[in-house]
Every structure is written in structure tokens, then in C-alpha cells.
Length: 403
Ligand SMILES: *Cc1c(COP(=O)(O)O)cnc(C)c1O
Image 1 (cartoon, rainbow, N blue to C red):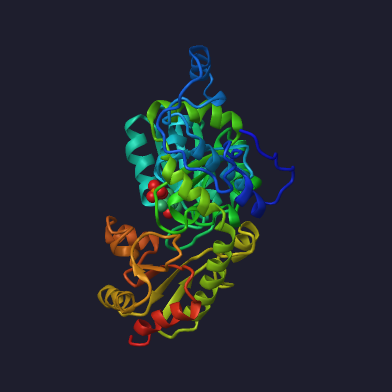
Image 2: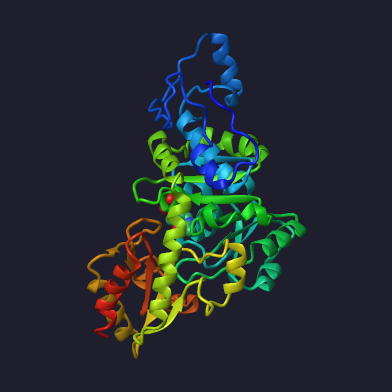
């Protein structure tokens, strides 16, 4: 494992293409894909040593694999954390977080606007094991404070949220958590480290779905949990080794290569999203636009501070309509008139995606729950990609102009 050692102090854009394990003896310039489940040991003594000290050598790919290690090194370098650990999916990273930080009798405070599966994981699955969760307003710090209990161990936030792009104050939540003797985890899917580094603002852990912007081209499932070396190596790595929510080397390799272009993709997708958001704000058939990059967004100033001055690439909007039935009809018309954008529920792809939250991601809620969450039948969500923004505008105009 010979290779040049990188100098200290490299910037994120450089680390995104350079941070990795050194090349093999063949000197490959692009990181190798090690498709192997087992690793041959030079002798029984070394084998015994590596089994006892997994950091010192590879043994079996459920524990680790060099391609996965390169992904972990690169993501940690970009997030500015000491370490990271890859997982099979983003949800597996949140499962791992819970398994490592919680036990029966513990309490979690979580935003009620987080990803639906995250809410189910805390409320239903961890609930079965005696972990109690309280769900609070994304933006009202007072509610977070009031929900704290003596046995609160974890605060969990996601910012901006899907689909309404509500932004919470990471630094304020970190203070709240630490004053209460608890830890703060932030799901950084929507911003990625290109825009937002939660641990710089005081968070203890960062969650990623590699499936989204990190891959960025909608090819594989992946996830990661970033944090201190002590937590990753001493707490989370042994759980992955035992429980097996391991990231597959092929998927790790795809996302590793995706990270190389994360910064330029994110910047362009944010610029496209801002242009589309401004277009939507000026369209007479649109009654409201939700986008942190717009001055009209309630947490615009906070978002600009926290997200490197960029709004992200998810834009939602309400179409006009007199009642729930006509709102839905109009939203469907906009979605079905698109000839370029994909109708799908994923996000973080170079291909723009258009979706109807009330009947997809939030379709399992009752109408009352949806109303409380502010997700009406007229709401359309865009995950803006890399097409020319004028082509996205034209694609939206096809439906909007006909309303
Ligand atoms: C998609 C997503 C997840 C889950 O990631 P998977 O890779 O699909 O398991 C978690 N949080 C957010 C914000 C997401 O968008």
C-alpha cells in the first residue's frame, strides 16, 4: 500500500477527488473496486491478530473492504469528521445510529418533519425495544426544549425537510442537546457536505443516504454515518460487523466516484433550482413556492448562513385550485404534462424528478395529518437536476399555462 501522503490542509474540493486508500501495487489512478468477500491471510498469527483488531487488516467483507474504506475516508474528509462508516442504505445508517446510542428506557426528540421511514423507525421499531420518541416542530426551538426529559439521549434533525424545505438551526439544537447531556444527529441528505457540514455547527453525528446526491445519478443504494473516530471505531463498527448492515463494495465504489463531482453538481443543481423557483414565484397559476434560496422563505437568512449561501435543489410549490379535488386535478395536470422530467419519488439525481407528495411519500397519512403537516393536494415537489433550467421551466409551463 505505497502511495503519496496527502499534505495537510487540503480543501474539500481537493479531498473529494484525492482522499482514499493509497493505490495497489499496480498504481491505478482511479480507485480500485475490490469485489471480494474474503481476504487471504499471510499466516495464522496475522489472521488471529486481524480478527482481534479489525482496523489492522482485512479479513471478511462484512467487517470491511478496501473500496468501502476509501469511500469512508473520502466522505469523512468532506464532512470534516474524524471518521465515517458505510452502510447498505441511508435507513441502515439511522438504524446503526439508534443501535449505538440508545437502550431500553432512553428517550429521543425528533423533528416531526423528518423522512417518513425515519419516523417509523424511531416510533415503531425502536419503540418495540423500549425506546420512547417525542416528535416536535421542525422550526420551534421551544418545543424541542420542552420535550427534553431526564433520560433524553438523542436529538435527531433533518434540514431542509422534504417536501416543504423547512430549515432548523443546527447550532441551536446542538447547544440544546449538549446542555441536556444528549447527542445531536443531523440527516444531511438534502444539502450534502458540499453545502452544509453539521459537525462544524456542533452536531455529533451526520447521517447520509448515499442513494441521493452523493451518488447523484440514481444508480445504487448506500448510506453512511459520520462522527468521531471513537464513536465510529469503538461503537458503530462492531455493530456493523455483528449485525451486517454493511455497504456492498460495488455500491461503495459507485458513490466514491460520485463524490468526485458532488461539489460541481450541487452548485449547478442549486443554481438551476433557484432559477426555477423564481420562475414559479412569478407564475399566476402558482400560489406558493417553498425554497430556502428565495427571500420569501421563512428561514431564508438561517438557510443562507447554514448552507453555504445555497438553497439546495429541491423546490416545492402549490398550484391554484378551489378545493382539494381541483387542487389535486391541477397538480396532476402539471405533473402529467411534463415531457422531460421524470415522475418518480427519488431525489438527488441529475435527471429532474417531479412528484405529488400527498399521494406518494405522504400517501399513508390521513388527510388531517397531511393538513397538519402543510402538505396539500395542490403541492408539487421538484428535485431539480442538471437539465438546462429553461427546459425545466418550459416543461412546467406546459401544465401551468393550461390551468
Ligand atoms: C432517502 C432518504 C433517507 C433514506 O435513505 P435510503 O438510502 O433510501 O435508505 C433518509 N433521509 C432522507 C432525508 C432521505 O431523503
